[in-house]
Length: 597
Image (cartoon, rainbow, N blue to C red; front, side, top):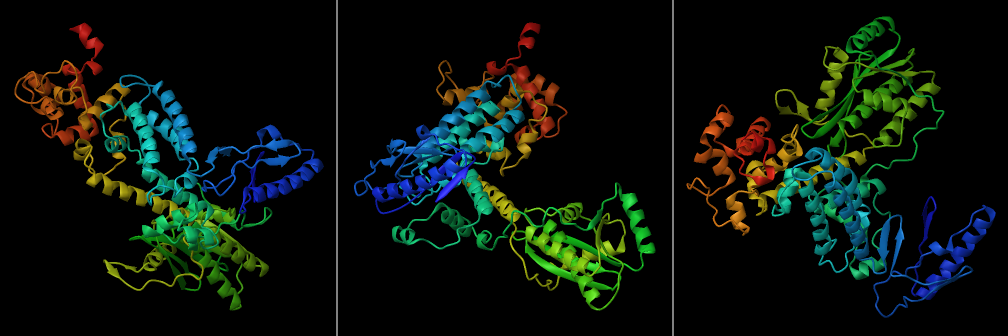
């Protein structure tokens, strides 16, 4: 088997011995040599790599060299192909070590952009980490995270997970200015970074969604050794979580129509007023056309599609499954397909129309129909193009127009209602029978991505509730939420770091420092003498700063509630200013205040 990408080519062969595999490789190289001679190409023998993949320690001769006309190629323990380092036993240890080296270098560079009291803002640093370090960390994870070798029935080892978690934790501390004592779960929550193990799962599901499952069942070797290929392991993880059936997923072809295909005429007016006026004019002037309104709707997790023909007083609808199968966009496309069905049936009855006029309130569906491409929902677009071509052979052209939704266009309102009722919805909270599913209905690739996102967030929520670490952050954020990032909007790095430390309670107050046995800290008590010097004590009760507290927080609603103080943007900004003015923390000491005093 040969694979290649630009000038990087790999030849993979298998047999019962390395002598046989080397012989097959010699034959393959001979063919390649002939090809090179007729295509003005040359090989670079110094870049050749040979690796024997086997987990047998003695039965296979892993030192067998490959004899070529360029000389002898000795086998190596590892080889690199398209950035993936493969070791001879496929444990991926060397690849993970290389990932660690690369990501560490990236995090070091990130650290040069800012510290806990200076530099690039927290949100910008987070953006850089997600855009650079995460792709480095997750590269080819669908292969290395499913080694299934000495992993104690897990897809990868605890050592691998620990390395990657440490990398993300270090990056989170650089991003947020948190103390090293801050737990990994709390860091993930406060920076809203998906835990590493869930990132791996999400990447694996999305990878399988792109390439699809294997065409064949388990091999004889897999069955005998009770092992799974990476593809099958990922598919099993989806099944275990009761996810979408990957084997029923839509097949997306490279192209849907030829480049010279003539699509329907499409019209999208510049404004709602223009679209409404144009629609009214067409209805009045073009009485010999067939006018059909379409819509797709998502309600209570179900998707429906409908087409309403005001010319023939006919309605067609279809149930498109739940949100793990279809999207509202797919419902919109199915609605257009139903409209074309109505037009075809009308033509079959012998009715002569000047054209088919379809009205929809979804501009994305109109653009996709005009220029179909091989992306999610391609099977629906394929049906539509075939229907348009069929009508064209009968001298009936199609045009699709955009009409604004919910402005009183009766046909559009009727189509919207019919699409909702196709899901079983009825007005007044009642339910009714669903419409029939179309003959062709496949889970979309995009719904697999949506499911993987929702599933990882759900798993994150569950693990965060049962987690024993980071309980200070849990009191402020009981469920993972992107809203924690909004607290840092408009804050310079120093104040973001201070907010992070206040929320995690890993901060330079005596209670924390004494617990960490910091030299010079002999007590956890506050200098006011009334209590331990904690975040709650300083912000809410400390007698030494009563006047300052009244001055800065006095008119603030919820000033006596720690969660409100640190969980609302305006209140958090005032709390940060109050802590700065107390000058308790040397790390965040305002030098200008010192000079003024």
